[in-house]
Length: 358
Length: 205
Image 1: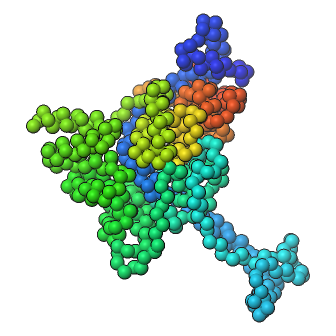
Image 2: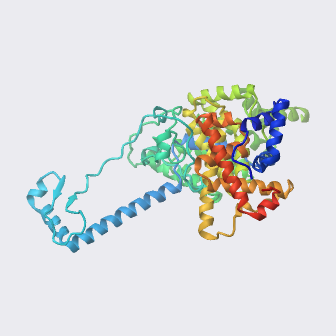
């Protein structure tokens, strides 16, 4: 094998087709005696020849926009790590209690705490007398701190020092992405994301809110006098559960949960998003009539986040129902509002076909 | 429905249009965000496929996660590289992390089977040697230090030039040179350690 010196600039020029004759000669000479550069060149060409995979771009983009619209997503790995941390803390507490009991520190601590003076005093730090059989530097024990209310970071992540794109989220799978209501999620951003200020999937809901996204509406909790007035968090939880089922591929369960959300909290923003998502799912499952109902409900709600997608899906539903006049109007509406839409080509093509047919 | 494979980089005109879309999306234009995601997703899908393989179980997940990552990362985008390269870098980091997790899981179960090294039906038509080369490079992504793996992925898998790698990763050109050199050294050792591979790949010592 050759020494680890490779003419990377010449390889770049060769890829760009801008080698001079002298450079070509020099590169050829190197490639003749460097199998690694030959291998790398061939491998790059091998990767470039791969056929494009078939993935539903619209669906992927809609999911990403929905995740943005819901302002939060947290993969299962985060929950697992939180549980692990809690388990470790409990183990540590248990160990401390066992050691304390064994050495006699714990009864003394409890006695000190239970005295009236101790009860009236502000708990801060208790220094215990040295116990006879304590092993290790455990003579000073801190009382547990008072519970601290988690602070929600309201500043957009763009205010953080941002240098480069996020490291890949340590989430196990995207299918585990869970949508939660912003006010209920306050985990600390993992170091990788925090340093980058980019949030990605791991970040907490508020801390990861993109700078361009509008701030969430402050909503006062309402009494549970009717399903329409329950606190938004309940609808958010139902939405989260439905989204998780959908992302995990359990479509029947997801649809059941979406319907449950619509029945219980019809006047919430989550319900508005649900009309669009459920409509698309029904369309994909071959039920254009029910899909149309949901899509119309979304459009009637006035939310514009997914309007372009919904208009396109609505036109497809009408096409499958054979309502040609309505379909033509639907495509035209899409073109009027979104002339540069990714669906525009299809819309024009359908309009042309429909005009010929009529 | 199959999509046309994108070029390695967008044309200057497209790049400018994408930069405009990115700026509008960062300013809160939801429509621009949707359009941007749709415009760059073919490159992102393509990159994920090159890094993982056409039939990899996590392909759609990695693309989805990368799209979400792009939405979240966009406020940090300072136009120091093209939007497509920025998006591709997010895919690289997501895909490499996915491969590392899969590698760790496989390591716990059965060390003798590297599922990702098995030939893929869709790719076999391209030749066994080509698939072996791809499998070798992908395998290295799970083993190299993170920075080297990222550089190797951008340079050899996605075919970025040295300057493009430097712009996308935000590190000096000499650092990129150094990382490429180290990654190629690792590649050489990997090939040398496997006589069968050495023979199959027709790499002569």
